[in-house]
Length: 213
Image 1 (tube, rainbow, N blue to C red):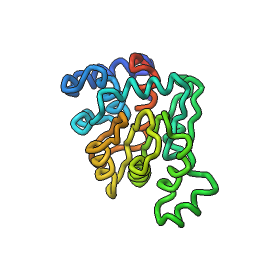
Image 2: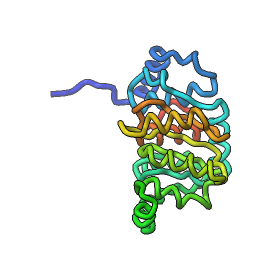
Image 3: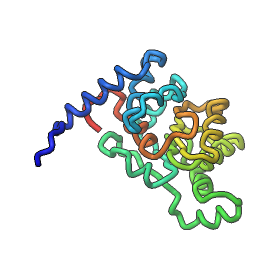
């Protein structure tokens, strides 16, 4: 039996973005943020995500400029790191410290999760970097605490931790007090690695290309 479905990748993307533009109330956002919101919606298939989208108006410019300048991209998990399209980068190092051999010991000493402990290893690389969190609320909470302690500021925080414990609370704290750092997030329980990687890919591409992944 022959299954009939769209096989042209460019046509699929054109139709997908046209559907998002038709169904999502994008006009409630500043023009510069609309393509980023589109990419996030495309990553999860839920147009109502726009109701929970929060971002500072300078996040796109700040993150894109940092990527163009070759600054590192700091990820909370390898799933986020794996979803970043390298061809859109300027040779940026993609850093995930979760598997560093020091992390288990740090987590035990600090009485926290390994993803939060892994953030501690960003200390000397976070200045001007793009931080991307797509899994762990504890990583976002820890980063915000470190900024309160005087850590250098990243260029942007793209924060999409997901789940039922701490996800909504960590993102609410970011929105309430971003510590002077440009940010983008989706409030509530929703998030995940796909959305986090999509946000990086969007800002890396300059948000102008909507015909491919």
